[in-house]
Image (cartoon, rainbow, N blue to C red; front, side):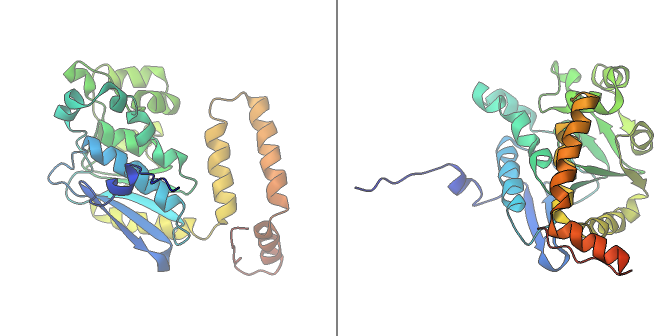
Length: 269
């Protein structure tokens, strides 16, 4: 007897909604590109697809670094407002899980933010490891204007980064902050002129792929896992991670390359 099993994910990725994916194996890079002009509004089905794409790229051996970017003047003005009213409570309850996909991904994820970066556009950027802002970037969580609050982790992640006072100022007033202010507050990793955004992303990708993929995965998970931990627990976990990496091939290669005054060749083992 055979039983056919079916899963919604089998067909969910047949046609990507509002974005496409590029993989450059030579540069060990994958780009997820939002492409619903002019504001790159993120639909409800798109959220499910983005999660699945991050999971697929996380398992793809050709990819070391993932870039989330957008075509056009704006990164994203937010979600499809009408979609919230049409979605079931069960679907809405999964919003934060889908948008947290970049954080769960073991590989480094870079968000390239230009123009409007509002609502879920800001929330998914906050779930990335690096945010490159420009002189045109405006970040906001404007849900109060709709009689709502951020629902995909935005207020929680932002409060961890900038504290409760600044988060209340942004969330409760639906206030926009510039790329420069985001940099000053520690939300953005760097801020560049908009015409240099592509080069800045390229440079960061090229830098990250030079490191050990095993050490990168370990560092990301350690930092994510210890964000809410006590200092003593964080130091204890850091020690365990350090101990495991000491026996890795990459660590041995790094030490030998250092003493040999040459560039290391890391293999992720």
